[in-house]
Length: 264
Image 1 (cartoon, one colour):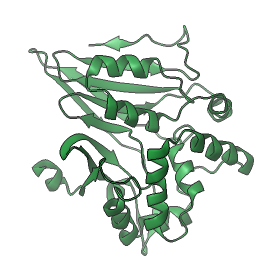
Image 2 (cartoon, one colour):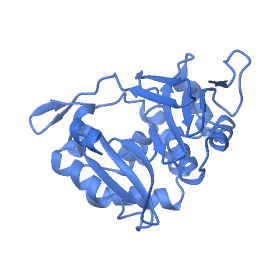
Image 3 (cartoon, helix red, strand yellow):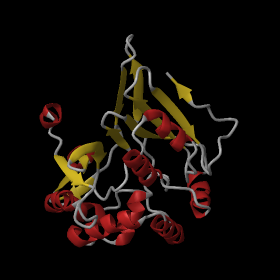
Image 4 (cartoon, one colour):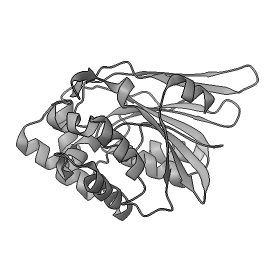
């Protein structure tokens, strides 16, 4: 907490035992008051697909929301205000799969005694207009600690309208980050895959991290996932030399041309 405070990253708790519609209220009002929700809904912050493609994605992502996620989405609509719509939030959930041109880097290393170190950066830019100035990810990033039974369960680097995870850690368990993997003709192939049941990674990853306490089970569950888009998952565990890089293909298969599951 002291490191995070020194870095100026706002800290929030999201209690999983609270009604889904209410548990993100503090986060939502923070973003609303700073003007982030208005800025993101007015600016074209992300690539805008053709209307027919966007419709496919909003309907497909909606179909992947369980009752709990649906309640959280309603909370964003309830407290977000401005021009925020269900379509904004659903599109945001599929931001990566809809071919967002973003690239980040991560590193996994082990000390001689087996202690694993996992770090990442977020080096791509976003520019939106917010209360007369231009801001980006540094101003929009917060750290959210998810609670269960009054105890910290996991922590996630979080952005506006985000329900799933892309950078997170389960306490005494394992870490997760996702990175871009481009194979060509991505939007068209991803759109076909999501229509055939391919999953949006952020929602899947959060549910796995909430449910699975240990590194190895989490690796195997994510490695077997049916995803809508190719990508990399980088994961580490609490045990000695627990680290893995998963080169994921779309559609629940592992192409022979793709790297195998790699471990420390």
